[in-house]
Length: 153
Image (cartoon, rainbow, N blue to C red):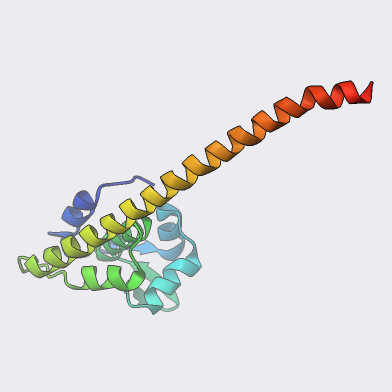
């Protein structure tokens, strides 16, 4: 799976041409291509995030579905909820300027970035404390190891 920046993913959803028969992908191929399970794709469909075409019981995913899945996976990777992802991608209008979508995406992205930076600070503090504790424990063990070996004699 090729990773892309948020800007690239967003740009790739603009100007998507009309679907042709060659552009359809079956659920198994879609799952394999994006490293997700069939269950995940069905779940996203149930939540209204994807809307594959049907040929009997066969789900056929369009370029639009593939673009949406890329954005869903990117959004989940950076910590957005599915509800937030849906809000952002549902505002897409292939004929409009998408200013509203871009503003919402920017707002949510800035808030998520602040949350992630706060988490990073907390993780850095926890790592520093744990490192100091393990250094202390190693030192205590080193001090006691010679005493234990001479007591055994």
